[in-house]
Length: 103
Image (tube, rainbow, N blue to C red):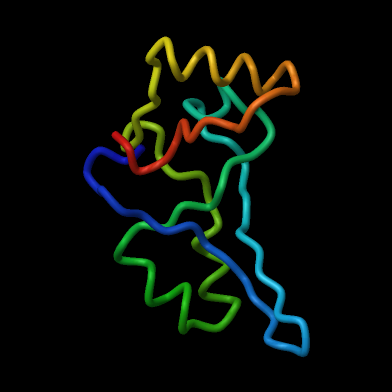
């Protein structure tokens, strides 16, 4: 979670066509996320970058593609989170929202 931001945004892309397509983007994992998922993490935007992501051309928007700083994040290390994460790695259950808005 992001303790200073109860709500945050992932960067996404869309294609408006007969069958609309949507996706959120990933970037290299920062050290905190990398401890759980070493390859990638969602591209989390800083609030001051929302407008640039939505309205800027790709040259400007692509400058926002970087791992979110670990020191601004918090990981849920409760026993429940650990059990759910272990269950997911074993192939069962739903993934836990380790980096959600739950604080």
